[in-house]
Image (tube, rainbow, N blue to C red):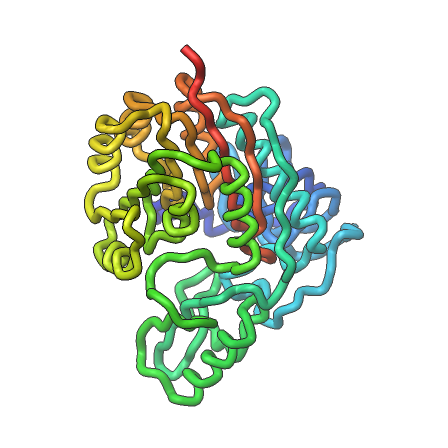
Length: 367
């Protein structure tokens, strides 16, 4: 055993090979097989496949492997649409048919809601698919270093020279070609399909519109107060402002709040500050029976303090938009003391990747 420290203890001499039957695909994109009862996670595999894998990291309860040989491939396996797939750290599912990607992601959300969210029968809505399985990303961030322009490898902190990204929109790839031709200086570059405030917004235009439609179907046709927490430049607040007498967006990012304020309607207000502190104060001052709350937190989900603020002053309607099903499920489990979970809708905002978007509708329980 090496003396190297970190989340894994790497056994230098443990590069043994095992034959595995892949049983499932976990959130994050790795297939799961078992070696003498121990779970082994192997990327680029599909449930039902029989494979040979090389064990590269091992702990008492699980191990990680790399695919060596496909002994019995799945009929759902397809040729990747990108020459960099398997080396680039961006995509995890290009070897899987798009139809099965949708099935896997919907299953992963439901499993998280059962195991972590403590929902015996999660009220799942059908997965919202992306009209484009490739060419959908309206922006990417590339890195330039020593004349190389591209993305980092999945396994080491080393750049791969990328001429074109198949999941990016054509306009983004045109911008990438221009950046490469200009011999970019070392640094990070965000390339966009269209101009606009350079703050957080949804990456897949078509699925973002479907997300808006889903939220619109949940919100009351007319309401008094809508609070948009983690609002960015007001993506949701501005869309739904016509339905409410008053809309308040909260975000820690001053740059995003400044962008939101530039074209704010008279019933819109935006606050830069600690989201938990501002949300707690706002809910305490509000008529909760006529208040709706949209949450769109980072992948880490809600802090314990924010969950406490919501439970202390629960709004009538809450919509939780998440890019991380496990943290969504954790938060939903904690919020069920005051809220009923009405629906969970997965959305495929990022085809070919292991990422999943989901929107949960929670309603205050009657006393």
